[in-house]
Amino acid sequence: MTASASAPLPKANFPVRRMDFSFASTQKYWWSGDPFMTHFMNNLSSLFPYGEKFFVDSVRAVRDQVSDPQLQKDISAFIGQEAMHSKEHATYNDYAAEHGIDLERLELRIKVLLEWVTRFTTRKQRLAATCALEHFTATMAEQLLRREDINTQMDDPKMYKLWMWHAIEENEHKAVCYDAYNAIGGGYFIRTGTMLLTTFLFFGVIMTFQVHLMRKDGQLFNWRSWARGLKTLLGPRNGYFPKMIKPYLDYYRPGFHPFDHETKALEKRWKERLGFNG
Ligand SMILES: [Fe+2]
Ligand SMILES: [Fe+2]
Image (tube, rainbow, N blue to C red; front, side):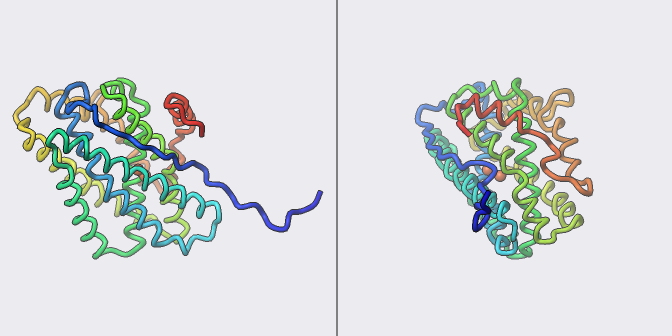
């Protein structure tokens, strides 16, 4: 057996899938005909174009300090996936604009907020904020993949595919920024302290945006929709967010790693369901 002259370059652990959605035939209230839950998803979508750009910029800023070739490959694939998410969530704005929902205005508020954060933080702190938000997206995505009682409430097949595709990929790449943070010598206190601050900021933003979207749509006093949506999201028995408390708190454990939350079988099931080859 002859030894090869150089070791083969590793492949990334997950692929970059090219998507091209169109929401031309999507109804305004595509989540069970319900304003609150549709606007909750609009709300999340408005965070992605600049939010995901911030994640990409944060990891790109430190990649010259990463020597592991496998992690370098995964960073490239991470950037590819997040760039595709930003692009498709920008297309989402066409659906919103078609129905008189101004998501661009909310996106610009996120842009301003993140520019302000960038001005007052170090590269390591921004990567820690990215790790915190990637933990949020991964645990929210895992919930969405697991909760058939919730994900089947999406009436529109294109929206369903967009959100489930995004949810799979958030789990595929959930450890990349975390591993990069460890590789540049990021420590426990900055990681968890940043998570605490990020949590307040994240919920502050989505609560403000939710009220804004409902008010602009003339739905602010649609109590039935508020009650139904808040039960879906916050209901103590089976709410979406209460089920996330334990995986959220895991992040504060010293030695935590995103792969402690095993989702490979779940991702495989969903990839088959959506007809992805790899
Ligand atoms: Fe994403
Ligand atoms: Fe992500």
